[in-house]
Image (cartoon, rainbow, N blue to C red; front, side, top):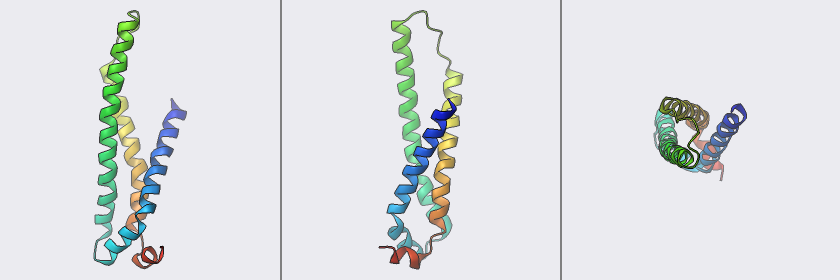
Length: 119
């Protein structure tokens, strides 16, 4: 379980970091036009929250569907535990939010001149 969680966290961090790096010019322009660091932080985090929410919903629905399928195919399987599924989903959402927060904080500290010269 732990290696899979670490791999998922690194993957989320990598994708979010790459997405923020691709938007360096846009963020620099926003900062040059007067956006505060909190505005940029909120922009990056809100994008991450949307993706995380969609992933949590799709993943939970998929887990329930696979659980029902396996229970129908193998009746001797133990029953599914909705508390464990909810707990694991919440835990993964918290980990994903933490992985999104680091690139968002870095984006909020970007210097507009450096960002505009980047390209």
